[in-house]
Image (cartoon, rainbow, N blue to C red):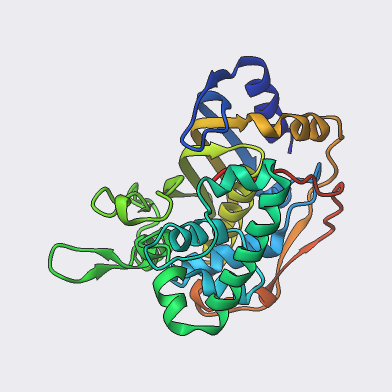
Length: 314
């Protein structure tokens, strides 16, 4: 994963000191591209342990068209919890301790951390056990899965972009219109988090399927490793359904940034020598990518360095 480490080095050397929506502060560049040959191994970081199970379960959640964190919580996946939690603690129905600016206070105020964890655990318990609460506060709005599988059309119906693009790859592989968009301007304001990975396109040549992703906003330390592995997995799954080999994953970034509270973690990662990439194992043949479960997917030969923890900016 030299490509990813080179991106980190480039931002440290050339990044602009910029403010951001979260108030954390970043070092940022604009416009960067990485290319991964998927024939050379599955592109998941080896310089820190990266949770393939979380990556895979999130992707399968997108592919089901789901937008409620309850499904992820049932898979012990909590990567979207903070955004749903924010919906609850800022609602008129919330009557617990003040959670104002909880994303930062939970990182800097030890007393508040205890309160934050208590409220988050209560939130998770209610999401999992209270259907009405999960419906009201677990749903993130029309985020990725909704746009991928149920984009509103002009006639009161919806468009299944994923199904359409798969059929297009199968029936017209030379098309230049194998595109899926998650950025819907009419619905962005109703999303808990507007899509960071906004648009992707597939390309077929020499019996291989390649994918290019445009990502408008890229949290390089925490988010980008997940995004690389997620879209590599998506490319493998679609290639399998379409009887193609895998080609390249091309990752094009808009605002690529390192948060200022991640710099020590980045330096630690850069001190490590990358190891050999693992191989993706798809254990079963399913008629459609929409039928896969987490138990169908695994990595063979993944031998990463230990995990490096870092705070998330909400």
